[in-house]
Image (cartoon, rainbow, N blue to C red):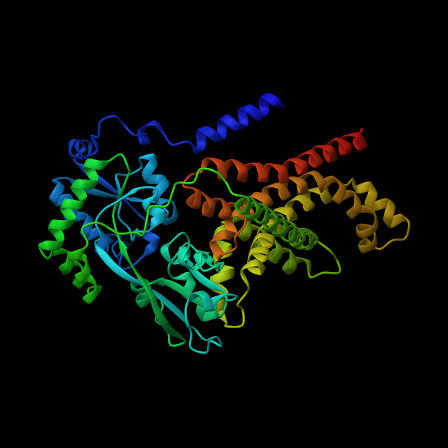
Length: 498
């Protein structure tokens, strides 16, 4: 086991450690490399949508930051190429060397300044707080939102502002979902950038409470890429002074009086660069444990649903004289094929965001939607395990029960089903281990479980190694006993067959 543990640690160190290309070099040739390559790669997340960067009807990337990148390329004398990456993971991808700069609504905050080098600002935005028109609470400042469910883009300036006020905001990965939840009443308020609120928060049931602060968008480079950052700064200066930046903003209807501040801001002014943290605090360790508990409870509740529903599906697929066997069996078979043939992530989206569009009464809390989505998906797999278990019971067991005067239903319940479940136990244990890990998907519907806690803490600590190892260790601590149980069940089953 010692050798296994050492190999496990080495594997995770390799997975989470940045490649050698991300390390600081003795001589800065970052700009020369871009010019020699003839291409400036910039990281974006198309999920951010309009007006940043998105695909139009023809599949072409458009947006004000796409146009800004083209202007940067002209000033540097190179072509530009967009590289898709999740917005919350743009910094680690930049450090890895996946692209040269970040240019996608990246905010000049102390947290970001501690991790990467920031360019001069190219856009000034406001943090806009919105709520339902029938909201029962009165807003005075952010501290007055304590006790309410407030949504924000995960790891954004708004997210950090809410956390500094002692709130526990709901993290979102997209810009449209928070306002859908606000309309449905699943959150009480949403704090996001005004250009996002203007496009995705326009709804007759919603209203603006206040613009609580301002911020700026900047480009980001690796700290060692001093020459490249200086070139980007100079290019942005020229684009601004020439009036091209204002023309781009006007085309996307996001210009305004606030943008005059850009002429006064040579460099972004976050209050102070926060010190880079390399360790984990006690509170962060406690939050990890809470995330592990949420993961375990979600897995247990979903597995109970999967077992019950899966057993019903397995029974329904058999030809029973007391059921409309043809119709019921076809419906059950269709259920199994559909849920096995489509991704569980898609099913979560449809249950959480799709059902409210059918009826305003089908608005499920995030945890309920997570349990329902995972449970219904795994029920399809459980149904096949139970069906195989039922088929594995010798026909003689049926005949013996019938000879004792039992009906077919009684024979199934008293003689066949207990044996089938015993045969199915190892498969059930393996499915539970898989389900435990698949709970990581529910973060897309705002449930903060163990993996989401990892991404939040990785940003707070400016590193992925320690949080990643801790997260992996907690998953292993929960799943390994189940693996031992599955092996024991298989061994006992083999002994019973012998």
